Length: 342
Image (tube, rainbow, N blue to C red; front, side):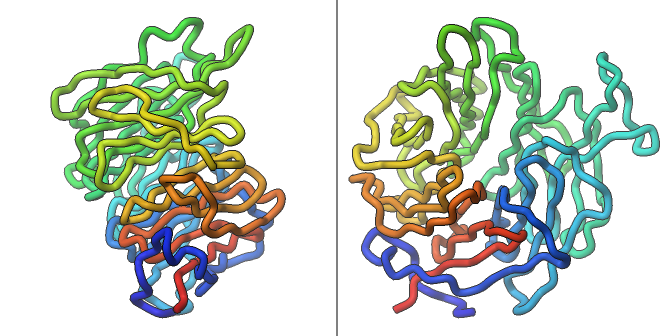
């Protein structure tokens, strides 16, 4: 694999090509990957959207075999993350043997688990008070946001393996907490802000919401209603205080995080953007469309610069930290890497 292809931009995205395939150790029918790179771009991790499987690969080793966790992760849980090239962070199933305790409904408490990226062995663990709905890692890999049922949010220090603080939860939502489903969360590039997107399921209509916390002043969350009945994905702009949020068909909104107000909607965006990610320069927005593959959009116009169509595939696509590669989950548990070829 070419080690230093050019950074992907709106000007060259049409020349993207598949340059490498990362294959699972055993055959699988998977077609629902959630993906993440480590901050250095040395590894990529894939996890089933339902939490039923996970594996990861070293990108510094040609032909490297996939590695899987030695113990099962929580079904229906969020994605796995790579806080650094040596560790994988996820949500593990709890049991009496692991030191877990019972939740009020009689289920065992889930655990935040840190695994070895080399062999999948358990390194550290911590019981959690609620089921986890979303995870996000800061750009430096040091802090993780844990969004749980009941609207609770924890800020966790991975390196010190300790709770930094519990953030103010998600108040002011009509109806019971079970009606609000959080899809994803993300840190701003400088680590100051945390954002989460959710859908409020209620009659007579559903409502897409975005939540914002200021982690420096410890203020928030602020809640903004979106002009869409659902909210799927989000991504912070790499250089500006903007947040892109996706919702229903043909909907991507841009929010000014500092002013906490919508700026505009992307005029030429099409499809369902279930997962969003910005390129390193901020001029391209990558969208994984539910059941249709992925598209690289010009951020200013919303127009498509490159598209991969895979009917029925609901996997993520995401940029490497340096913006030179796109990872995409394909049928059979394969993760393909895409880069610009001159």
